[in-house]
Length: 117
Length: 166
Length: 104
Image 1 (spheres, rainbow over the protein chains, first blue to last red):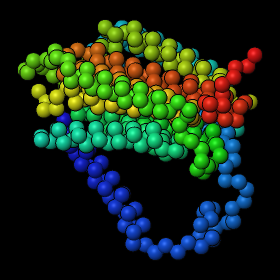
Image 2: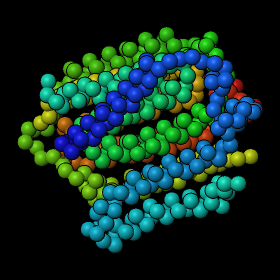
Image 3: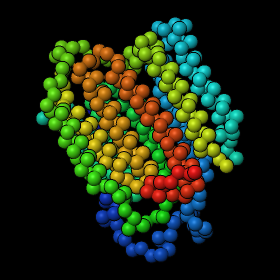
Image 4: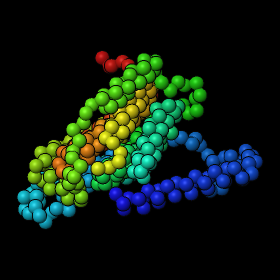
């Protein structure tokens, strides 16, 4: 438990600094809004078109792929720690696990969900 | 008040306060941000309980993957923005508020009345849990491990089929 | 033994579960309902790990079950959100009060 105290202190300090910076900025800074200042920033150009275009669903598919393979990695971590002690049997069990997920990956690949235009 | 109690109260206040903020906000995007705070508070509670590996898994999976997925889904389903008259809750919200309070009081009363069979004072604790988890997954609990992989495969295929680009 | 009694953790989990139940039953947005369900799953995880820590620390089942619950929650979130996006594509709404008619 003791090593986590450092992480807690880091977290509290970084949150405190971030909150303080934003609060000091909004309390002490002058606020004189003009219509030009309030327009959304687009590197100096005048914004054209609606702000809310339909996002392609590709982004959601990438996030779904990430979540599934992230959980696969979570299962890989503890196995990797005891890999030596388990011998061939552990390796074969993990190959079964990975084979099922590789089958899923091949499906995703063939269906074209990995194409980015 | 020992240090552990102080940290626990802090984590519990963050978790429950963010949960309340999440269910009472009008915009579902702000609710997703409160939900990230809830997940962080729950991870802090896991670490306090001595489950370090699970706390990191919580941050990695819940905040890193599930919260991001929910944020993407919220951005992909934009509704009429800034409609201040749109109600947050559906038609049955008073009944649900009563039921949720009743459930909370029932559970709290149940927890306080039961005589839990706690482990003895000098019981050994596990250190290095991830190693034990690895061994457990490969020997005693091999079946949930493989079933989890089938579940992930099915979820992957299902999500790709349903959300395919037209 | 730690200075925080078991009942405190269970009370936090019970309150979180009730708040999640309220969110899951009273919100109009379908994604808001899913977020309430994720809160309930987190409360269950807190319960599992608290029982593991205070009742049987040398066993594995508590934390292992929590890892499986996290896996199931993630898989379910992915599929449920895909369903919500598919419904949004055809009905153009995620308000559950308007999605109440099955196609015949």
